[in-house]
Length: 607
Image (cartoon, rainbow, N blue to C red; front, side, top):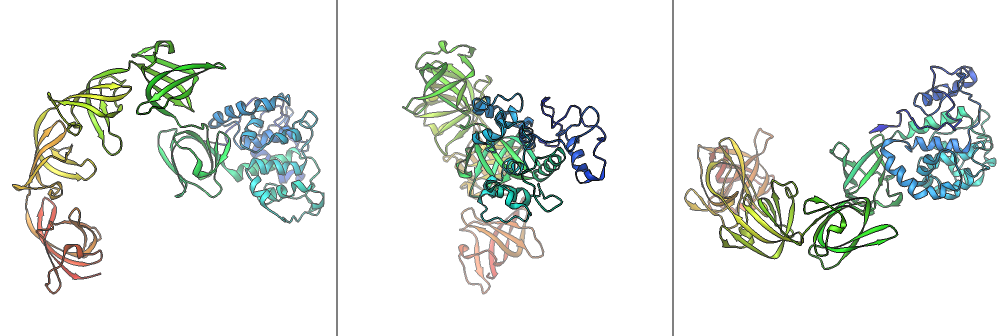
């Protein structure tokens, strides 16, 4: 992330505001008392590369600043030439070059295009400031107030102010259409009055004055820029999550005045798109603007190739996405790459009804990977199965073309495992599979499994749509899937996953990486007791969280609903479900490898 204080290196030899030479240690003509008010600002802006002196070592503080020079300088202060904004600048040229060309500018096109893209200049403003008769004229002070307000993104705030009151002695000379802008520039501390108490709206802006205004704008905004990828936006919570250029995730608060743009067009936070690249404008650590450089998320689509069309020099690809009957069309990028059957190819290599996978960036096809309608992926290993939404299988493979890929599974998939036909639910993580795909969808699975037995200690049990158990085997933690039909026993009795406890000794028969049979033995080390306050109760999974008396660290107490005795302080029986957060309890039970299981719970005081 580069701050605006870095040196500006753009070549703008026609800009007299920049002068002819680089900043020297001291200008020869700003040492007098009449320039004391501006000296530090001039030197600050010169040191930061905004303003240069002349070959004779002078600054010429009383030289007038032209309209084009002023616009260019404030545009740079807003980031026009920053490296992070290069995509925005390219988009600005694409959108506004035809308009700007009408003004026959010999320099400053970058700055003008950037200001238009950011909404700080309108087409009508170009007529006002950049016509052949106006661009080299000195900028008036009231015009500087207008440009400053627009460059700082304050036009909406300024124009919403009604009945503003100015204290300048010559306020009647300020054009009516500039009053709110002068008020804004004054309120922000960028501009101020003259020695006589007037604003002097119709006099020209001098180089010394410009240095002061520019320095104040830079200090006020403290703008920096960051190239990111938008992961998600939660407008209700006021948060935006992005991945930065270092591939690290960052979360920013959405401020009341944060603006959102999609390719230069303003939108509300709720309408901002995600999964696109963007440029963040920051003022200190506050989010000023989120500017998406694309109006469509990047995505990958697999389906049936339905042909192509050529119109106006643009090739359009037609594809029927897997699982859909509708054909969609996408324009191709100028940098399109095509691969067919694993080798570089052209579109002519792909036939109708072949399977293609297209990659879209900014709504355009940048790559096409083509294959025959039906392909077989042999020698894959099941890495994971997604059963929460549409069923998909993710595989690992020696071939990078398939490694890590996820494929949807057809409703009528044909599944054979270890030589017999089985249900899809019998496919487990770790199975070795050969997959037949039609248009990228798995239609046939031929699987083989391995069997083995492992012994260890339960470290963690994860209850989810697809439960797993983590077992420490020879000091190494292993995670295994627990299918719904797995056989389970504890201490020789039929059990469920909820009956197991951390610390239990366990013997597991595995099919690939899935549990077929699991038996545990509880290890009782000693009797114990706990007195404390209930912090949480979970009857579904059978545990209490209790903060022992004299401690601040909660302790987990397990219980079996049918085996634990619950009493009130008078000794009357109670239901385990009646225990509430805040109750004081006395518990006796047993410690098993650090896991405490209650046998008696006495509620000595209710919350």
